Length: 93
Image (cartoon, rainbow, N blue to C red; front, side, top):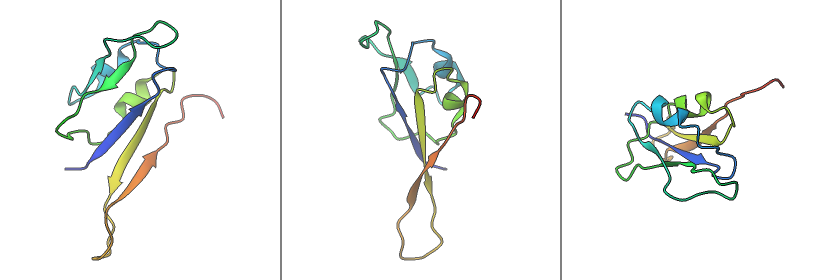
């Protein structure tokens, strides 16, 4: 199974909760604390490391507040797995 993780920019998050419904593993919930703008931001709750880095949460986020990282297998026998950044473009270039 692929491994991944996400980083949520809590100051950019407006608490719309779209990412919580998009996560197929239900690993995102709303924080109990507030950010500086008064919103309850989303947070990753993944103590077992079940996030696959599918990026559905980042694709649905209207504020581009989620950064996705995915583990990539390296074909060399000596190399360790490498983490890649998944870039989600959410607006015009």
